[in-house]
Image (cartoon, rainbow, N blue to C red):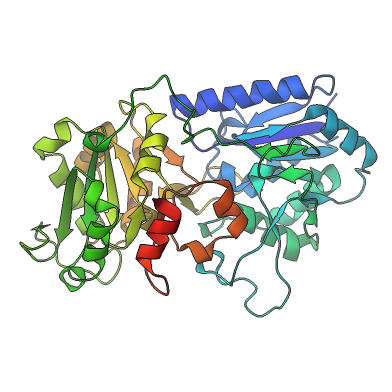
Amino acid sequence: SSPSIVVLILTHGSTVYDERLAEETRRHVEREMQGEQPTILISHRAFEGDSAWGHYAVWPLIPRISARFPSLQWLIVMEVESRMDGRRLRENLKKRREEEELFVGRGMVDQQPVITHHFYGFDSDDLFQYPDFAAGVLLSGRLVSRLSNALQTKTRSDFTIDPKHEVSTVEGPFVEIFLCLQVDHFCQSDDGARCLIWFQQRTGHTKSCTDRPPIGPESLFVAIKTFSGFHRTRVVVAKRTWVKNVRHVVFYSDLEDERVPTKTLGIPNTERGHCGKTIAILKNVVKQPELSTARFLLIADDDTLVGLSRLYRWLKCYDDKETMIIGERYGYGYGVSGEGGYDYPTGGAGMVFSLPAVRLLAEKCECPSIDSPDDMILGMCARRLGIPLVHSPAMHQARPSDYPRSFLSRLPPVSFHKHDGEDPYEVFTRYLR
């Protein structure tokens, strides 16, 4: 018989460490849900043999989940760093009527209409609530089936930026179902009393990955993209804040400037895109003698701010001998078949590469034109070359004011981007020191 409960665990990547984390969470769910025999799906390999591009966006998997589990009563969505209380969850489900179309979780609200959500809600006074996947989300089988039908018309997406927001905008307009809020059951940390599902940080936590060798300043080579117009503004901010603690750093610019100092690679400055510059940086970094002691390369913008000690704690969990890219994962062109599209590390949040990835990309990745979007071209190259992209939800393409406060308080940030309308010194001191 088809199972009535499916648990979908959203993963951040497919490296050895990510697989270990997913396996721990799968065993945890199995123990907690004893007696229910749920089917547990690990998102990046939910349908063995099938493509799973866009798996973490949830909606590309919905039609396949609906087709495979015709007698589905409940779909429970959580992240790889979520935990659950199985007894409470089972009791809670028994009280609910699965014949209703339910979408239940913990709501998040934007502080203002934000670019990452295409300024959704700018014309409305109602605060749009969307779920925190890490705190768990519950969808009834009826809703999954109706969503699946609605999604058949969605051939592919353009950009996937923030899946927890996008899955809600799919559900709202398509099926008129809005998030039913249960803040005391779906939690951002374990309060012990009433939580059914909660977030419990593993990656980047001080107590995590203690079996791995530590990462420090000598382990990271930093390349910063800038241009002559910002040498006295953004570059000064970077050097006074996070860069002063970096051991190996090169500022790559369009002009040589001894005061910074900068390095030029003969690539003219472009208004947008920067692909030519970034690929040239990869090719140049491979030749740097300091790379011999480094384990990772970070490429950042001149207006990126980074909390280095937190970044080191994140990187410590990963084996730098594996080929990988770590950053804030965006996506382009996903479809319900799981075949189309690709992931890419969004440039402003900072892009981290293991050295095998640096060498492979430097050798095999080319730009269609110098002003192509560098992060997207890297994502296309990574898909072609089979380089996995690891998502860090602590790395941010935008400013602190562009994220829900509750999200920033549950996971200590590793990076932010852009100085517009913000005091970068205050952002650094408040969030990243």
